[in-house]
Length: 148
Image 1 (cartoon, rainbow, N blue to C red):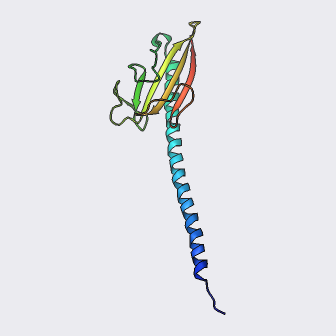
Image 2: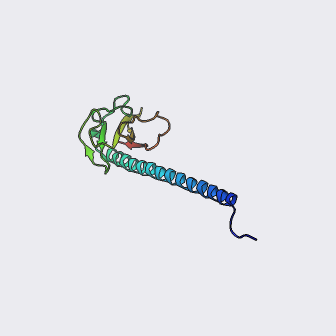
Image 3: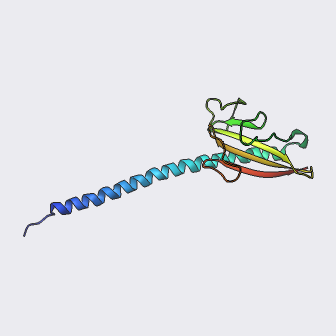
């Protein structure tokens, strides 16, 4: 009686091993991509929170209402550009070289006049924020209130 494996058994075993290896490789690629998006979203959230706290702690007289569409486009005095470490870069128009994030904010006075609604959006540079409702990938959107 001969010992060993037949050619069919070897081919089936190799097919199973190859399929499993490809599935693990694809899972690794998806994991790396998900980690990159999660890291970027976390950084964007921290940057948005920093600006929200800065605006909430500012003197009432320093705060002015923002123009319409301040969250949707770069508006002087209501946006800044940030590098990968969260450092502010100079510029008011298009994103300068080295900009990784664009941070925009809007201040809207409530009808009573005693409070401001503060909205902060941080998106990757070169990408417009999604519609006002919802949040896109790697985007942070925070809302707070500043009372008089």
